[in-house]
Amino acid sequence: MSASRLDALTSWHADWRGLRVAVLGLSVTGFSVADTLTELGADVLVVTESADEEYERLLPVIGARLWTGSLATVPAELEAFVPDVVIASPGFSPRHPIVEWTRASGIALWGDIELAWRVRDKVLRSDGTPADWVLVTGTNGKTTTTRLTASMLVAGGLRAAPCGNIGTPVLDAVRDPGGFDVLVVELSSHQLWYLGLQSGPRPLSPHAAVCLNLADDHLEWHGSFAAYRDAKAVVYQHTRVACVYNKADSATREMVEDADVVEGARAIGFDLGVPGPSDLGVVDGILVDRAFLADRHTSALEITTVADLAAAGLDAPHIVANILAASALARSLDVTPAALRAALRDFALDPHRIEVVAVSAGITWVDDSKATNPHAAASSLAAYPGALWVVGGLLKGADIGPLVAARGSGVKAAIVLGTDREAVRAAFARHAPEVPVFEVDAAETENVMARVVDLALEIARDGDVVLLAPAAASFDQFTSYADRGRRFADAVRERIREQGGERDDDDSAPDAGA
Image (tube, rainbow, N blue to C red; front, side):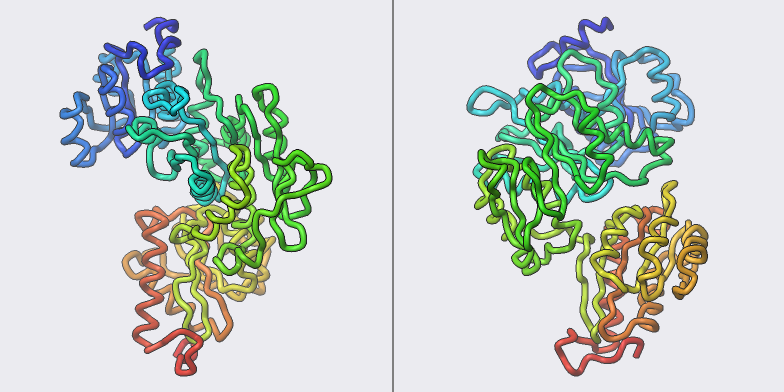
């Protein structure tokens, strides 16, 4: 197919009929891509190693074909299909054989975000324009910030939806018949890598964007930290109004400085310090905006207070930073400080994000299973200094040494689980040899969290915090970080029930380890 025809496919109402599209992968994202394209009249072949039974049943209903089998090499069926475009699910790395074949063959390679941007005009706002997009990425805090931003926009009277890597495919939001004023799109580094390949005449141009922070993660997918950083930086390209960055993370500021943005777009900083003009920050325990007001050189607008956030369980330093970032994004769309406060009053963190699952015998048990990399775990340890740290899993190529060097000596003890335990043990031996380190047998699967809790009860005493902040992925022993967190919480509650434990405000609570 000629490049000119692909370049013309920048609207839901363009002629997509007969376009041959190979869709790689059949997760929720892959199915949304196939469903969208068949609705548009494209000829769709889905290529995947295995298919969920429901998706396999639905594909012929929507008019798509399915091929399953090994993807270690390019299937002959895919070559014979001669696709005009290949759209890959985010799990396919740049070095996957089919991705490499696609690029070497000169076939257009898209991700789902590219397709969603091209067809974003299916449902229009009352003024006849598509929804604005606000993009959120970062090594950690993406989901919390995405949810916060969407909540603030809704409190401000806008129809807004969180979507993307948060769970709801962007294509599903684009096709929602009710329509939205704003889509708040959480983007993984994988999605951004594919977005960085776009070459059409109308590249994605968000109203506002943020990269919250940058640290080692997904290095096995990208191949290097530099490649990971470059993928994250794509989030700021062609931003129209506000490039929000973390003043405490110089990498995000450099991304903004290097970005090719629309003339007039502003750089908006945030951190936990006193803000300058065009920043959001904290002054004497008050979160303030000095960016989105006319007299920002001499004045500031109050958003909320740290005391109010503490009452809602939102005062951990990294959560406060997420709130400031979300506030900046929402303020770029003229949402009032009063609406921000209203949203925060009703907001609750996701499960498995610094979630207190029990308090008994004076011991607080905290589930931060979503801390799937060292950077996220560092925030957890900062929120709970002196905790008994449950750590380990799949490190995904990340070096846990700097985290143990920075935070390890401050923990009471470490309980190590997971496949990459040797790296964790070595980090403690080198950087915090005085800290007691305990292990759960790697062969433990079904009972791993029961063993973790038993060990913790032997060590913890009144006033201690047991913190599950693994700094690693979960797929070695669990189906997901959520499964890991649920099993931790279940094991904690089971032991408390067995011991007849109650909350620590009850004098009858037993001693730890009883």
